[in-house]
Amino acid sequence: MRVVGIDPGLTRCGVGAVEGSIGRSLKLLGADAVRTGPETELPERLVAIERGIDAWIDEHRPDAVAVERVFAQHNLSTVMGTAQASGIALVCAARRGLPVVLHTPSEAKAAITGNGRADKKQMGTMVARILGLDTPPRPADAADAVALAICHIWRGGAKARVAQAQQDFARKVELARRARRS
Amino acid sequence: MRVVGIDPGLTRCGVGAVEGSIGRSLKLLGADAVRTGPETELPERLVAIERGIDAWIDEHRPDAVAVERVFAQHNLSTVMGTAQASGIALVCAARRGLPVVLHTPSEAKAAITGNGRADKKQMGTMVARILGLDTPPRPADAADAVALAICHIWRGGAKARVAQAQQDFARKVELARRARRS
Image (cartoon, rainbow over all chains, first blue to last red; front, side, top):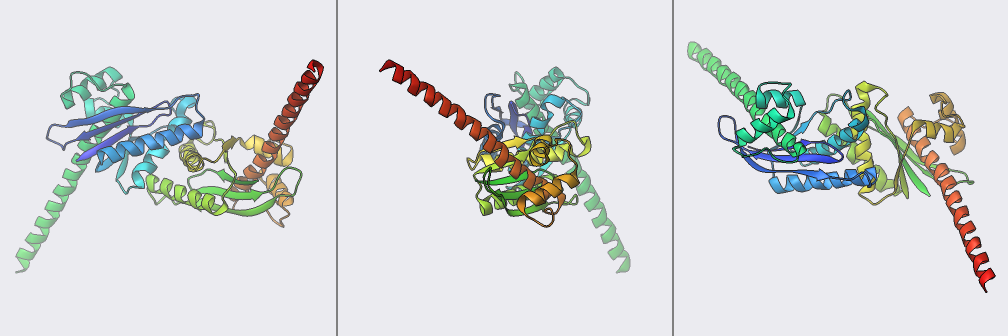
């Protein structure tokens, strides 16, 4: 599966694209950041972010989009812009009918490093290792977006396997029930 | 001038449209709320809000859009959804090239009632009186959106008059300078 990850932000909105599936090696398709400057008015910054995300999704044609869940508790000064950018990211994905899932930073950290409190450096090292890169994607927001995409493939894969196992079990129960009847 | 006011919200996003200019009576063109339910996933709720705002702007073809400025300090539990809805509102206006301005709730209250701390009832009474209505628009979010549109016409008018006066003064100074030269 191909997943686009988005780390919402007003100044730098990280975007990444990863292809692969659980149990196989993952491939980085691209990583970048949509940048807007404080000299631009807020509405125009949000429109630029929308265009950047739209272009990224059109280029990479993902099966799903993973967006970082924003919390109001952190960084009160920047949280409004981050929340607005995350709203744009969700709409860009949802109006194309793409499945879009929110992952918290802790979920991404736990998926990538096994530690929900891992620091930036540890995350960067693991993202590079997972994707077979010499160095983590730059800037940091792009690396975070890539981490979200990896997290989505692995978490989605785990959920899908549980669902598949439940389905298999239900089918066996049904077959056993029919066998007893006949 | 015709102004669309938007009071962003995830459950009820108030929209209003008012026509008029400062010193003349104002006319209510419409007031409503775009509603989305908590049973719907967040990305689909935001898409529904985008569609509702787009339809409202297309119907009323405003000269400007006024959006309530959201603060992170208030209602931590709902502020993220409100911020995301406000981001959508700003993008809907800006990608049409419409001027879009943020007004704080205090600015709207001060413009409508003369008191930046006026309560909902006082605001509703004054909105109805200003527009020549028997009762305030319903629901409350629609009335707030209408108040933002009125605030924008009156504040914009005041700003425009100051700008005009400054321009007139500069022209007179320039004419006097030229007269002295010749």
